[in-house]
Image (tube, rainbow, N blue to C red):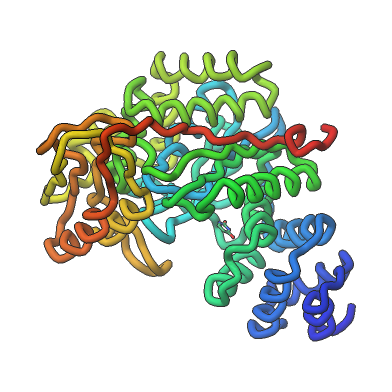
Length: 442
Ligand code: URA
């Protein structure tokens, strides 16, 4: 192994690393023997020069195996679904129990949110008693016993990735497609699943603001997974406007329960069915998209997906009775404000980024990892792009607890939407990326 300085210089000058060198460097970062300034220098070199397919696969494997790897018991492939994050994206709360109700083994590790609203872990924590810090043993036992487990990332999984990510966050090196792909895929592999569905969000409320970037990330995720022996598919979904009706932690749990009960807004429902169907296809439980979607829709309609959700909540110490009446039993804010249409017309823009900024200003999201989240605040998006609205009708309902935070939230909302003489609804699913669409032989 060359010294760390040689390693940094090789990438700085556009050279290629060997597998051994990547392994030694990653171990030094994990163990803390490589100082942060050298890791940061390499990250910037990798950000600018990129990593080729070999380097990316080797680096991802090292990250994935830098700590514990969940060992799920045999009995069929476990499938994980990962969203790159968006405003109002509560699909994991629906898709995980739905796929489990269809007979899949679902091993779901999720993050806390940094940004607009909480992550899946924060949303689930609005259910009293829910334990989202499962040990790796309890996690795999639950998958074995009831077919599903939901947990936050334990620090013992992919610890080197945690260190790299913390440094990327403060060195301007987050938005690199290879580094993002290695970060996501390494955590998925450490989580024990054998196949992945990636929901890559695209638009103003997403990390990837345009179709070109979203397609590039989806392609990198699918290629990297394949090079590490994992089947996967990338679904590119719209995030120009928020998903569904509600944005905010307990409000999103409420909407998830509505969909799991067979109702709810059509976009949340349609995307959840599409993602669950992709999981069924990947695992070989369905032959084509039509039969997979039919099966998923049937499990929503017959109540078995909701039952599975209650079962996992109960198994993880949560009070499943709140799911019988989430509107009243989950944390609710004390104040309500409304934004009404100033004229008749069609909603032609509902900016997810600005709605997300408002949710964060209300206290529903966090800027730093240590910030607390208010589970009760959020927004109801009552009109979506393409909907007709009459003058005076409510477009957005704001749920708040603190008047000062309300003022802060109203500022981005003022310019979050437009009304025009005509507007068409947006497409929800913008693309689908597989090994075949990448031009590779399966
Ligand atoms: N999400 C991740 O898990 N990693 C990244 O690098 C970016 C988003």
